[in-house]
Length: 485
Image (cartoon, rainbow, N blue to C red):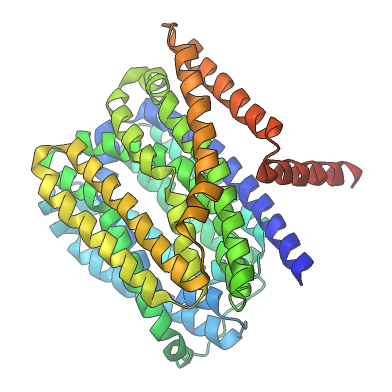
């Protein structure tokens, strides 16, 4: 069992990393093209709709997908009930939002938002019809199939978005990109998933999952509200240009942390749930995941903050340079965000969705209060308050991790996090000073990446870091196996 679990975890991490690497590369290329063509206002118009889509997705799922993944057994009746619940609620929510679209437009004083929101919000309708099939792929650790689904959908949707942008459709290019992506994901999840719904509308299995899923629902609802509150406040108080700059700073900061988390998330909750009955074993698995996340998250996300000035100066004739400080502030927390999510997954894997709910709500309420207090002072005080609250929340997660699996604060800090943080700081500091004497942005950009990467990998190699050695060994074996096959 141990070998089987280890192999499946490694395979999931490989395909999760491969998929996220390809997706991030595609998002980078497509994002650069769209940034060159579109304006901050175009992005701002779409950004203010994020909270409506995110809340609708959370409500239509109501936490049942997480409940399915966390169940020990796979029963058709459970998945069938969740599927039809998602579809019925998704269609009902869309109908409500369709008729509320003029109110959204009036609130932001932008008449175009009526038609834009009615089309854009179709995205979560498609999501409601495909979320259960995603749960099947996730629960069965079908990481390869998930990777194929996500990469194909992203490729085709990106082509549609770029085509619309080149044709001069402005913000409609972003709408077309998002909606087509949701539609394609739905089709491909159905294609790759071995499970099919039946026309038996028995919702009784939901009662068994409700105590768990209801807590996940409240948790996710508070998370998306706190995560999207910036765009809505900025859209109302500062205009769509500032909102667009914030959305891009957040997008690029999220890109790094999302890559790390999606790589680990492909296996984290299923694997942690599988070993939840053995505290010492789960603690060992959890700490190893913490080290792996720290190993890739710190250099990637803090490195993004390092190259942000040159990156934003080089793209789109520098019209997005105002997003640089936003990106850098958000990267400070973004580097730790995957660690935060891993704590949350561990708590959920133990069936403690009430603890996850309480922690998330407490942190989200504190964020909302802090952001509301600092809103009139400007964007940067809001960002600093937001990041500070998140770091306080990380200590709260650690408190419950110690209570449930006995992982101690000093073990996490000195054994799992601080070594990678220190090496990252050393490599990035050297890269900053190495590039500082040069004025050419391209040269500075290249030097920072080369020097930081070489130093980080070199220190890992010569210090004989276990995580580095295991990762390189695994990928070498995968490469050799593919060549021999």
